[in-house]
Length: 231
Image: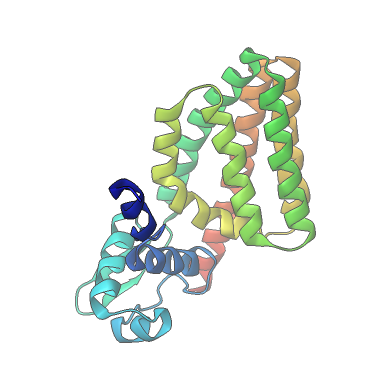
């Protein structure tokens, strides 16, 4: 047996994710899905027990979540789940509208059956997830829809910008997708984007994308305003 073959048989494969990354995913998911709610204190000792990791890992996770805008560190209070701010939400939707409208227009101008098929697949996943009341799958399929919109027209830089906002966007989506009739109206609005792309209608695709974002923004504003009033 050669030396190279011997090395291959005993090599330890690196886990796909480190313990810190796994803990970060769980903590982020708990915030986005509402297990931890805006304003909740995040006590290190409790998180260690809940996540089953060391305090060192918990501190690293909290620092990362703070950099993403999901956690705020308040004087004399410590880390809490960040409150969602209406003005900040509006800015996020403004960025979404500009970038998604651009990507939808480019997809229409590309006139690619492959793009349409990929978008339809994600849209079917969204509808099925709403039917099954699986909000986690709704978010995952929605992310897949927009990833297709950007990457299949080679707008990887724009998708990178969207990815930087994805956590905050999903935090907002986790609220808007649960509102009445969103499971019907949201996919219907996204279907208009796909229909315009199928027709090669760049202006129509741009406007459909903008309309969808505007509707989501209005819902988010209403939800956040109601939360503020209740407090």
